[in-house]
Each structure stands twice: as structure tokens, then as C-alpha cells.
Image (cartoon, rainbow, N blue to C red; front, top):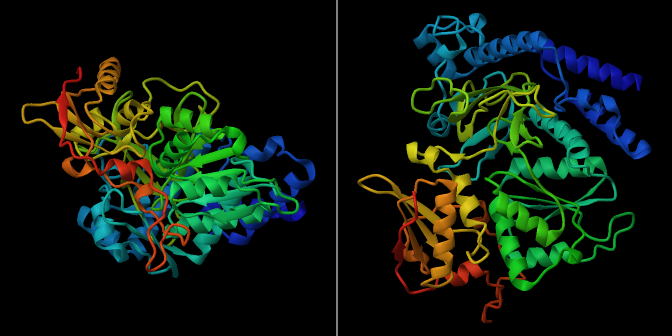
Length: 516
């Protein structure tokens, strides 16, 4: 215990002084937490004070730490990266004078630092890498929103992130040594895969890498008995993306799977918008609660945690959150919709350094101060979708998925597109199993009107090739298995998902009008 106290003290002092964090201090804190849980079965009341657990801190202390952390991060970026050295010289900014609490556009205001776009990071990732760091791992995003973004991590950053993930796995996910977690994410997503495997096994639980297999195979593996000594009889936890979960739900509903067929205790979803209807359908199929959180490769270990009131709360320990208008980059007023702009703090991040990074993720700011269990943390709505223009803010991905995924008749993952009309308004193009789908159309139009969606019309298709281009999904990063790939010279007997079968229709489309 004395050694743990020293580790916590050294960690706290490193944060307050913006000094490099010793990974072994965080590793010891995580290791002793696991030992405590194993001995006593539950965390103590002081677990909220552990790193990343959103403990309450005096507001004035938080302001001081925020001001100091932003200046230290800006100073490291200016000194050691080519991109920010040029930006600060051109703008005439002094990193040591920046203050996020200075109003207006004065010379010392944090708002004077130009917003960093994804395009800039994608175009020259090396210009954001600190000359003082030792790059060890290049983490690529999936690229579902464009060209994959390359982010470099040092060995120390990886160790810190893994230790924090271990604490989160034990406290947030409730993982224990008798559990087994299945990771159903793309195997090329290196950083999340490393974090999931390391944190799971450090808790003492078992880890199974599924990848993004054909849904029928994944369901078989989830239901299969493990027969492992000291472990639950089946896989207990599943980590995946929303679109792949939707593919599993669709296949499970079609094939008649029931909660009793599985041993799942928890399903964690990340990377994409999780709609309310999909959550409900997944919980009905698998018999386990479905939770989500907000994390990005570019801004780890910063992230967001949902509360019981539907807010997304962002811990200020690891980075600085802003919600800005994507056209003017001015602060979004209460109740307005804007883009998350984030600055991950040094010393948590020391390799790829980012200041005011525009994530592209849309959120709504609270119209009034939250009154929930996490009210002491900055709050936004859950992620609404990605900014692609004004229409994406008025007709969000979340609103569309809430509409579409409530319909069991629509194949999942849903394939849809939105196009703007020359005279105003938007058309929703949606893939369905067959046409004319009169009853489905009537339900969708009625629910769109009730939700107040700004739709001028609804176009249904049973042939995906006749539709406007649809957005790529993480579920599209399908991985092959010898169970589903035919041997040379033999017929293909791989499982077919309903979505694949639906693509072979012939009707070009049928248009109706949904209420605005």
C-alpha cells in the first residue's frame, strides 16, 4: 500500500507540474487495483480518485491545472513540431501567455490558436510528431470518414494508455478474472486491439480476438461453451462497433437466437453512433446491457462517458474540450449544435501533438446546467454524427438511425444516403428487402413527421447499386475465415447475411413523400 501511495503521489505531481509521467507508476496503481478487487470483490469509495475516474476537484484548482496544462502542451508543440512552430510564428502567439479563460479575441486568448483540421493532420502527419519523442507505433484510423489518419505513439504513451485502460476495464466494464472478453473489431485497428488485449489480460480475464467475421460465425463463437478452468462457461463481454453489432442483431433475429443461448453480461460499443432502437434490440437478443463511450485514436486517453440522463461527460483530466461552430469556429451557445474541438494534454501525449483539433464529431450543448451524477464534468449530448455540411447538423446520423433501426424489416446494417434537393429539403434513400414495401413506407413517414425530421421525401430501393453512394461502415471491414472461404475447386458454402442477399434486387427505386 505504501508503494501504491508513492506511485499515486508521483503521478499527481507529474500532472500538476506537466512533467513526463512514469508509466510504471500508473502500472502499479492499476496492478494494485486489480489485487484489491480480487481480494475484496468491489472497489472502495476512494476509487473515484483514481486516474481517469472523474473524481470531483475544486473548480479553482481545475482552472489552474487547465491553464497550466494548455500552456505546457502548446509550449511542447511549438518547440518540437514543425507544424505548430510555423503556426505560432505566423500568428505571433506566445505559448506561455495563453489563457482559456480570457474572453474575446485578445492576444493572450486561447481562441487565437488556429483550429487544426483533420485535412492538415492527414496531409502531413510527420509535421505533428515531436522531435523530442521516440515514435514506436503508428496507429491508423479506420477511414470510414475519409482517408485514414496516422497518429504516432511512443512506447511510454502506449504504457500509460494501457494502464489507464486497465483501470477502466476493472471499474468501468466490471471485468474480473473469471470473465472472457471477445473483441469484434477490425484486426487492422492496431491501437484499440492492443489496449483491449492488454487491459483485459492484466485484469486477469481472458481475451478472444474475433475480428469482423461473418455474423453467423461470430454468433456461433459467442454461444459456444469455453470449458476453461476458472472461467465462466461462455464469453461474458463483447466489444464491437455499432454497425457490426447491428449485423449481429439482424442475423440473430433472423435465425432465432435467444438470450439463453449466450452468456453475455455486457456489450461495449464504440467508434460509431449507437441508436436507441439498436441498443434495445441488442439487449433483447443477447440479454445483456449495451453501453457506449467516446474515444478517438487522435485524442486518447481523453474521452467521454455517458450518464443516466443521456449526457456525454468529458473528463478534463487528460485534455481540453471545446464545442465550436464548424463554420465560424466560435463557441456554440447553450442548446446549439457544434463540433468537438479537443486538445489532448502533454504529458499524456508526447509524440503526435495536437492543439485545438477539430474532430468532426457533432454534439449539442446543454441548454441548462446538468443535474446528474456527473454534473461536475463538462457535458454535451451524445455524439450526433459527423459534420459534412449544414445538412448534417439539421438531419443528424443519430436522428436517421433512430428512425431506420427501429424497423425490423430494414436489413442491418442499414444502407441509406441523404441528398439535398435543388429547391431545398432532403431526400432519404433507403435499402429495403423488397418493393413496394407500402406498410414500411407508411410507418417511416409517420415516424419521421412525429420526430420533426426535415425530410422532403423518402426513396426506397431493393437494389443497392441503384442508390446514391452510401457511407462506409466499420462492419464493412469484413475479415475472412477458413470456415467461410471455399477451398479451391469447391463451391462457396459461406454464410450469407441478409444485407448481401438484398443487394441483388432489380427495382431501381420508388419515391414517396415524408412529412417535414
